[in-house]
Amino acid sequence: MVVRAGCCRGCTGRRRGRRLVREVAGVALNLEAAVGDRLALAVVAQYRLVTTEQLHLLTAARVRIEQTRRRLMKLREEGLVERVTLPQAGRRRVWFATAYGVQVASEWPELRDFAAPRLLADPTAARLRVAHALTVSEVGLSFVQDARARGDICRPLDWIPEVHHPLGGGEAVIPDAVLFYRAGSGSMLRAFVEVDRATMGPERLAAKLTAYARLHAYIPMAPPGRHRQAGGVQTEPDWRQRYPLFPRLLFALDGTGAAGVDHRISALHAAARELAVGALLREVPVLAVSMTDLLQRGPSAPVWRPVQDPAQRVDWTSRPVQHAAAQPVAQKPTTPRPWPPQP
Image 1: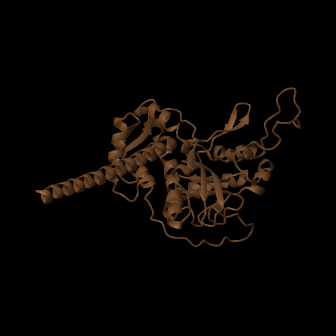
Image 2: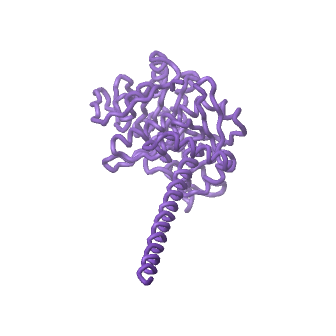
Image 3: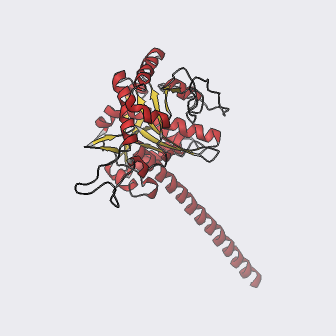
């Protein structure tokens, strides 16, 4: 009797131990799921619009896409995200954050630089913005994937769309995205990224170069009655409040064939000759690339064309060399994604 009682107590202890292990494992799985849910919502909110595939490759590329689909449906049931289906693209689903989702995400420290987007009132509003927004998200995805392949650091939330940079008088420069990228050497790189889908004429595209030159030189005026030298009054360019160096300027050109890309780069080249942009170009690399080259060869490939000398081909981290051919940069290959996406 004593032996059996002891055995029962031992069995009970083992059962309790196994139950505790299961409970701990369950807590760990729930914690992992919560972390994944949080990152997914943060990316959807920050990127404005993403497809299921884009979100999967950004946040959970090592698991099956079904897990990302289940996560999105869960977030939708909780009222944090909504979707629109594109019938002309193989019924692809495109996701955006609801007002509640934006409110929740904007309280997180990882989104401290997050500028809440103009809310999409319904799926129709999302559908009308989808083409440009998805192209911007695709460019961001290309940098994230390329960094992973090269051993650099560019996390999904290091791509921040639509950051407002005031110019005074109610004007502002709002790049399609600001990129933060840490190279394997440890150097921190930043870039303003403009995505052009040929929806505006070449002259309007070139005018963006002048706008960035204004931002490069912009110093807020002193308040009335105060001298600029007075304590507390800003005396240096406004962008230095955010960046130690002015970010390089990258144009990704889509929506036309090679001839159309050449035409728009020629417009940027003509604008680069203007005196108003001289100070910007002396200090800041300004590069352009076709979406086809960007997505097929990767951002780190020598596919970028300096607007001062479009005959050159450089990688985006380089400074253009006048009257000299750029040397290709050794890189790890990335898997090209078809663009535009096939149904």
